[in-house]
Length: 345
Image (cartoon, rainbow, N blue to C red):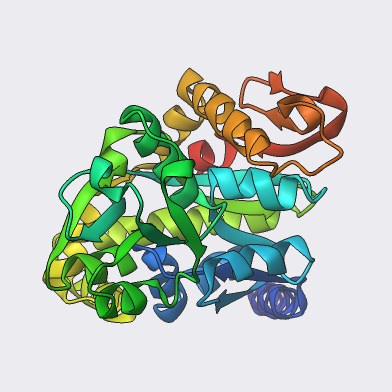
């Protein structure tokens, strides 16, 4: 009798846990197509994301938003609890907009995945007088500014046209005198156009364009831990060198609109932190502070802090060691190694 009673209690407890997980709080996560973020789509499709959500008794709804900037705007307006975005965009959109956010995962830095491509030209200097398509005031704009600065030029030498990342490759391909700044996969599509030349890419500014999973700071640890766990299980699946890895890579390539060979080529220009310790170590390193110093000054100079901001110090940025750049009373962007480190245990 005692053993049977114990089994009944165990079954009741298991059922209760399952009901709690199903009835647990629900969270919405946004992502957009980019080589370094394609693992999110696979994590959802393969059930990895649900597995980790269940582990922490929550529900996670992952949504693909085809327009990258729109995904961040939706996050900022409260439609999502987490969103994949770059370090600069995390600062200039949600943080400046008053949304306190934490970079839970530093997935990679762009090491050639962002670039400037043009026809009828072979160097940054050849952009002078040209019309350039880009997502204005995004990391593409930052990349362009760094390229121009390194070549003794300024934006006054160009005409910039704000263009959605969903349209930029098609516009570039159809323009016989096209010039564009974008990221993969659109960059790969543009590079494949007849007469296209890559004249500058993010490998020339390593560690400056960081690809993150950003979560509302007020969100519970259950969401942050579930996202980190799902992310690193997915990366482990990708790199396992077995049939499961082949399936994962093939899925991501197809979802991004690339062939498997093209997707693997894009990964080679993405400095992925495949191991939790790698991401945690980088997030805790002094380089993050150095990069954000450059990014915040560029952003302020472009007016991205708003008319009321009198200096780059208007928004506080907190780092893993607790130090803050800017206003300590207005910290709205935080970098932490906590959840990546825990995922490696």
